[in-house]
Length: 335
Image 1 (cartoon, rainbow, N blue to C red):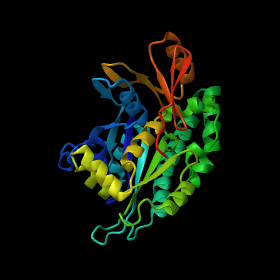
Image 2: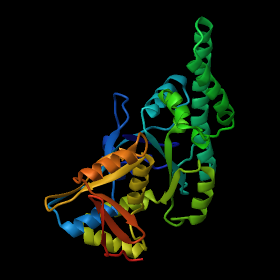
Image 3: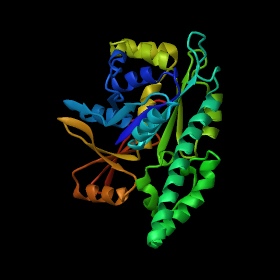
Image 4: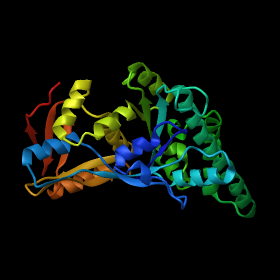
């Protein structure tokens, strides 16, 4: 499963990509035109708690493939390539500039995160609208040669979805039955992909709860939004010693780097359900099953086989399900 970082120029995408993947910024330039790709480790407190319980020789977190996409090009051919790359992704992460810095220009002339969220939403909606029109044209040509009830149903669905795209609304906001989603899934609509919005705030304004609330009203219902200060996160990441890093975070009044939360939101956007194997040799987030395609049924089958643990946290209690029994570990988190 793959996710792409998208956003306007000068929003902090490259620095965030380096933070997520560990790929140095000076390795992000490609002469072949390929977009940089790296693996993101999903920082999961459940894995940490299991490691504390079992003290294994090795701890393995889940990983996500992440692509760094450039800003949306204006010329037709590069834009077509950009859209094609995004269609191959399973989810998107929109990095939005929410920091002021006179030394860093903004493509629109001023810093306005809510406007930039709308601009990206509209960009993706227009791309999907063009695809709808192209598909309707092809179906009409096919129907002239031979009538096909399935193609007629697809055309009717596309005509129903078209007004929402014309208004800049994502297809995720349009309620659809599973049969309808299956009918258009092969078209790889961009606004059907889950999106996480990452607000890159300034040090003086982070975490900016007011902006978080306003941005939450702008994104598609069901999507996630988080705030982080990429500049500050980079400074924290440069501290190699774990104890010194913890002291640095404590001095800043930060319980956990925001980039860790972002990795979990990206994992959630992909629809993953975590499966965990534990033992003295290894604690591992081994299985990742999407929430679609009968994931619940497969989850029950795996648990019944008795060879995988599913870990779920309910408030502050860690619950471990194994062979149909629930074991409660009363180790509680600090509030």
